[in-house]
Image (cartoon, rainbow, N blue to C red; front, side):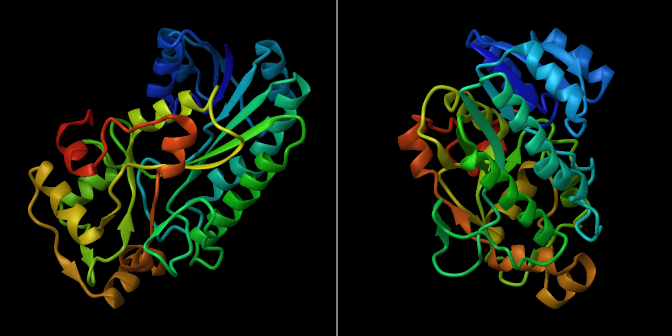
Length: 311
């Protein structure tokens, strides 16, 4: 199958290109970096240097590839996660709004039959039940900068699901861990945990749903051919409170146990968003993805994944 992959060199792009080519698909991937384009070619994809925010060059790249399926993995997050930065999500917000419109228009122009889109499973409203499914509302009133990010996510998802003439699937991924992520051995979260700059906030009751990037890539490959149009949470089997997963993660890094801080101090030092997530975040259920995509995570729990999965 001919596949056009936008965002082919991000955290999920590497394992996704490998799994797509291993499955026999013909992959065209775009990147804004000539250096990364060379690595894409070595991985077996046809690489195109292109910016998804530039309408005409993107349309030309998609037209040349003549894809049957378009995969949207566009993000532009910084190497270091700094939640107090007001513009933390702005480049990614642009890709999720204008970039999505451009990519959808190009996909429909060439008659692509399916559009698979990256989204997030840690944006559910922090009310009601602890573990959410795809029918639950997103947290549109979240503190900034996350509030603007969720607004961009909602706009992106609506555009994909409402697009005429193409099957739109939205994959809401959990917190990525593995190579190329913030939780990788050389990632900024790992660095902060080693330096004891990533504390448990208050009771640490916020629920985090993780997924290894290899498992996320496998779900994406499954979504090429299977699953009705709609939204799917792509997460592991065990949503985990911060007070459980963070000490375990620190141990796997050989770091000292994390400190504990009150919520007011976390809000002062790291911002309202961090304080809310640490104490109120809801987890996500993968039941629909298991049924509809026929997908099962290899790393069913972060407990073993943190210790044994590639990172």
